[in-house]
Image 1 (cartoon, rainbow, N blue to C red):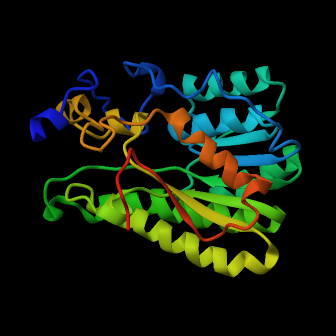
Image 2 (image 1 turned 30 degrees about the horizontal axis):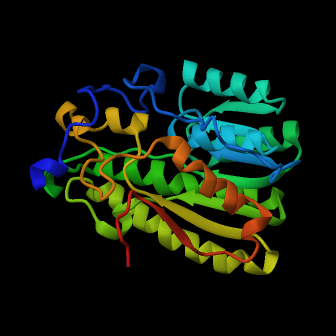
Length: 287
């Protein structure tokens, strides 16, 4: 039965550098649902998405643009991925501001927000979405440098960007954080990564309480396995080959399958929801 679950679902592949390059993956992730029918849920809104050049962030950026939002995407390094997202958003007659920056330092987050507000004027939606992961077989193999890097990338960046953006976020706006199923299940080979994702859960709930009187809604999405560049740039070829096969639905999600929950949480439809974690994980029950 276990062998049946761990079926091969992707080709063996690995990229040696994080963040990975989406355009080099095989097969390419599906970031856009051709059957999606927008209804101007986010018309006139300005959305800021960290890690918006690929993976879940890219799918969310495209969905937001279809719903009428202008989008600023933040990413670590300039690649063809970022340029393609910008072109696709502008083809939808929406503005797209691209910012190459390292959000592990607070000043970079401040500088990015200053550029966004100068060019786009305001912030209605903030999606904190960047992450790195470096699998290790033993806790003793995690160095202090790796621990610091993972925490600065995955949770410090959320704090820095939220803090910098908050003075410009209007009443009734939304902050959406990307956590992970590993925050709830743990992962023996992703101890530092899972720890940051648990911190994001607590960060989400605490900031939601702190901002409820300002009518700013703060929620999080906890994905299970999703076919993104993070996977091919962090796992070994053999792990990539069976990635996602152990969840009840037997496969990893495509990025576009996550986008609708981010649209919902950014819209007025979620006006009575804050401090919550939404699980999109292929059928795993999280209690």
